[in-house]
Image (cartoon, rainbow over all chains, first blue to last red; front, side, top):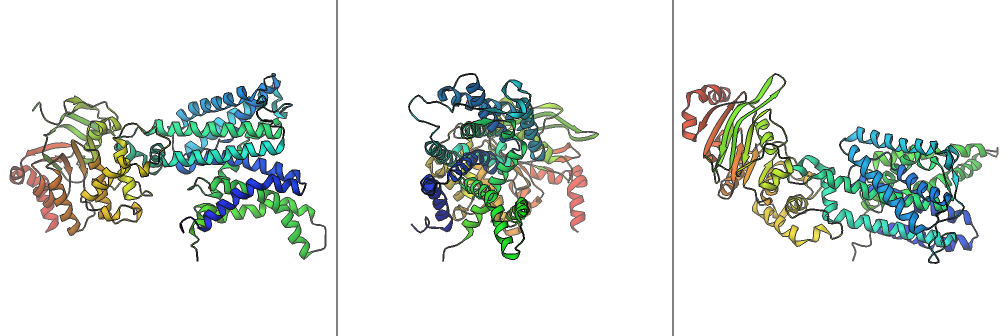
Length: 331
Length: 253
């Protein structure tokens, strides 16, 4: 029983708990921005969990993961623009197309290793980005407003912000559970073995390529679903949602939270995005203690603080926040 | 000769101008321990690489269990019963000993597109893994992360992994490398036990071990077979003495 009561498990439970009661709190204090912020956090956490499946467990550092967010989002946006608002069409199609894209680029990318893999995944993501920029009919660079969120007959109303938040949270928890099952299954053992020592895997009889590719596709489908949610959340799509810096953000979330664990990226997503919002205020507050001058412009330099924080985590906490927590012994 | 387990005919491999394998002819019978010796750079590891399927020969054929496997990929050869251990220990360092062996078991337990059940709790994988660990005397270390095990233990683990495949032929690339005298002695005992069950092709620098274990010895110098035969004959062979054994005795003196 004591095994369950570790600092890390308590934090994980606390994060999950906060995510669960957040809409109630937001409503109580009448802060709708908070709900919107956390919807975004939850959606990007899904993307980070999916990236972590291939990066943390499979050793495949994809620098183009935001492409799936774009594909998922554009399927919703384009279909909505063409008058198809049914979620029963949009969602499966977005996931299938994300999976197909992952299958094609995975078949090419997975023949490379290390830096080359990183660069080639980035290159493919940039291709998708520029395709979206070139789509004049769907707004090109300026993007496209979605006037109607995905419709699920009368089953669920996505335009209700609280309902939508809980749907996203449900998807996140399901994704975490799914990834947890996968990494501990035989399939997950093969993928992790290939990360650890691919050559040895092949000598003991595993055709590792197909397992790694399958893993790459699963992650793509999951991230495509996150793209569907993101488009529904912002009611808007644009190439910016799959800008390469977004792919970088997802990597940072996974690394910051901890790549060795399934829940790590969720902690990373919450930590990164909350810091992004909170640091400007913190700068203003701390600055206000030392000077009475107007320092609102200093708020823009929050990245000066975030950068070194990330550096410290990478240098001194290889397992990310989750790893740090796991190291803390009780008592 | 037709019933040899492994038969190699005219195997040649060139790396640029260097002929690493020069028209090699070799066979290993079932139930036999066949050792390959030769000075550094003789092309022993290149030969093993070609048999395992990691290196494609320029010409020649490899037959295993009555089948031409020259063109088969590594994992297919493994499925046919060809197991290999590496010269430089090649394990899953961030896995536990038992997870390492369980992976080797899993490789031969059907496809692994199974996404749901917890692999670590599957008796089908766990029991054979435990048995193989016990076989090499590592049962007490089952839950130790491999990266923190001693070199000798890692070599034992290599062997345990090769064994779980229930191989018909074991390719062992310098299993004694880096072992102390005591550990080497234990490894020799273990191999002597093993060769009752499985044919072994052994590459080894430790001459004492080779002459204690081998049924037949092939001597490789600059990619070429200069002698092949029973240990006594090899020991007496003047070419071998000059090319290899003498050389080594000279350096030992």
